[in-house]
Structures are given as C-alpha cells and as structure tokens.
Length: 366
Ligand code: NAD
Ligand code: WQD
Image (cartoon, rainbow, N blue to C red; front, side, top):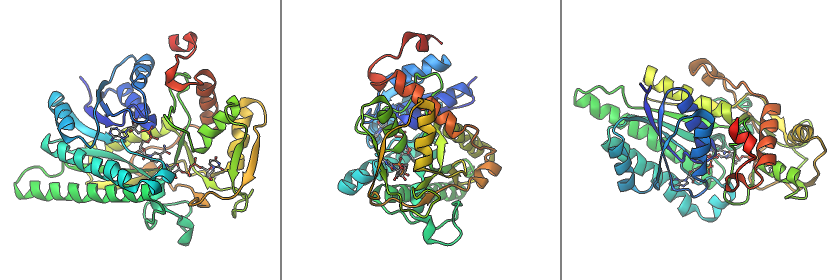
C-alpha cells in the first residue's frame, strides 16, 4: 500500500523531477502535472529507469482550473500537493511582470481552488531565498534565519512572497471554516520551503537539469564552459566584501533538496502545524571563485573566466541558517559541493543535448 499519493506540479522540471523520484523511492504514488514549458516528458522515463516505478503524467497548465479538476477527479487518492510549477527567470520577470504574476500567483490560486474543491488539504510550496532580498541590510542576519525580514528585490521574488501570503491566508481560512462547521480543521496545512541555490544532478548520469532556453545560473553555465559550448565564464564582480571579492551563495545538492520536500510533507502529515516556513540550505557559503575551482577540479583542468561588472540585483551573501529545518524536519544536507560538481559533470558530459538525446547505453542499463 502506498504511503500516500502526491500531485507534483512542475514535476518534469529540475527540482520537481528529483522530488518525484524521492517520493516514489519512499513509497508514495506520484501524479505529475506540467505544461512542459521548461521541461521534457522524458524526465518521467528517467525517473522510472532509476527507481523502477512510474509517475502518472498529465500535460496540464496550472492556470487551467478545469484541467486540474479533471486530474483530481481521476485520482481521488491524492492527499497532498507539492507545487513547483512556475516561471523562474529573475531578469525576465522584470520584463514581463504580468506573465509572472499570471502564472506564478494566478496559477497558485487556481491550484488552491481546485485542491479545495477536491478536499486535498496539504500543500508544500517552492519558495525561494530570494524572498529575503539583501539580508545584509539588517544587522546579524547572515546566516539567514526564517525570521529575517522579507524584502524581495525583483518581480520573481515578489511573486513568491505573494504566493506565501495567499497560501497562509487560505489555509487559515480553511481551518476557521472547518472549525465553524465542527469538522476536523487540523488537516489543512502548508509548508513554505525557501530554497537557497539548488545544483547538481543524479549520480547515475541520466537525470539532471535541462532548461529549454539559455541557462543563467552559475553551475549550468560552468558546465557549458567545460564542454566548450561557451568560451569562458563571466564572473559578475570581484569587489564584494568577501574573502576573494566574489559573491557568496549557499549551494545545495538537488538530491538533498528533494529529501527536504519529503521531510516537510511528512512533517505536515504528522504534526499538522498550519502553515510554516523553512529554509532549505546547507548553512555553508561559497564564493564564485570557490565554485569555479571546485568544478575545475572535477573536470580536471582550469576553466577560463573573466571578471566583469556586477550583475544588477545581485547581493553579497545568501547563506542559510538551516537550524529550524534541521531540528523540526530532522533534515540536513548530506552531500558536498564536490558531490554536486562531480554529479553535474557526469550529467553534462554524457548528455550534451540534455533529454533530447539518449545518454550512453551503459548508463541507462545500470
Ligand atoms: P524548472 O523550470 O525546471 O521547473 C518548473 C516546471 O514548471 C517546468 O517543468 C515547467 O515546464 C513547469 N511549468 C511552468 N509553467 C507552468 C504552468 N503554467 N503550468 C504547468 N507547469 C508549468 O524550475 P526548477 O528549478 O525545477 O524550479 C522549481 C520551483 O522551484 C519553481 O517554483 C522555482 O521558482 C522554485 N525555485 C527554484 C530555484 C532554482 O534555483 N532552481 C530556487 C528557488 C526556488
Ligand atoms: C550565483 C552566483 C552570480 C552566473 C538565482 C535566483 C534565486 C534562485 C537561485 C530561484 C551569483 C554569480 C552567475 C554567471 C556569475 N532561484 N554568477 N556569473 O543569482 O544566487 O540566484 O537562482 O528562486 O532566486 O536569483 O544564482 O546561479 O544566477 O548566481 O558570476 O554567469 O554566481 O553573480 O553571485 P543567484 P546564480
């Protein structure tokens, strides 16, 4: 018997696919909805190749309430949702803000409405460390605890703050409404997971990040420098107040992050806390130069880079204080930066075209 059945929105995407895998490996059934805007259905096959279990997949847009209703009707066993589906490019969010509010905020509202109609009470939401903005503006907030004042500096971050608010208000209201009706109110729960910088791939070399457009995150770009697809990495500023002048981030292996979702879901089901926010990070900060060095080491040669101007909107330091998740969710990161770099390189080297081309047969067989 399955432990439970989870609807994973955005489940063919990077973090969603790894979380679907972790759920299946831990006895859950998984139903994925994704409109494939930034992913490929091949992810469902790779999940199955790794764990021997298959997730149900529906090409449905999260803003399509009727489509979501149909999925819930087909799968009355769904008791929880993990909500990844979103647009996530920070720069683009400032250029087409209405689209970001429509998909991210509008899509979350549609999802919550469909969940309510289907009487599905648990939601785990992909929030982001970006909700904190520049935490160095407030004294003593590095590493960043959950009570650090919110202050997003871009449209994407503001959509995340809004969705956190919508979920909190909705779950509160559902609890109050249930109380008034004399029904069990504790069943309505939400987890707001604020991820730091996810990275890495599956150690098998057959599952990883495969964005449809041009990547803008540090590690995927380093991957492209290593394969020769890019000539060099542009380092955005070496005049920050860090030990080597480059900005500090908390890089977290996607396998650890996926386990964090499982821990949060299990916590909601067991402790019924209402809505709570948790940071998912390692607590360890690394500079851009340290990342270049770590990735160069696994590739086996120095990767070329050039220091250029700071990128607009970047902040000095986003390092998590993960103490709350460590204590309450009984979760902490286990994999190292070196693991993330080695796994990423195995993925990039064997899958230069991502999911558009099969990896070497021997990898699929193992
Ligand atoms: P991703 O783009 O790989 O995954 C998002 C998935 O959502 C994709 O498969 C995409 O096709 C799907 N999607 C987009 N719009 C949709 C819609 N309208 N209907 C249905 N599906 C839709 O991104 P990811 O890195 O896996 O991010 C997953 C979640 O985590 C997002 O909510 C993102 O904002 C959040 N997050 C990501 C990071 C990061 O650095 N990757 C950090 C913090 C938070
Ligand atoms: C990391 C570091 C760059 C590219 C973003 C979002 C955040 C979250 C994670 C979703 C920074 C430097 C990068 C390059 C560089 N996503 N860099 N040259 O900006 O910390 O966070 O992704 O929620 O919301 O803002 O991640 O990987 O883009 O950058 O020097 O070509 O690498 O300046 O210091 P970031 P990133």
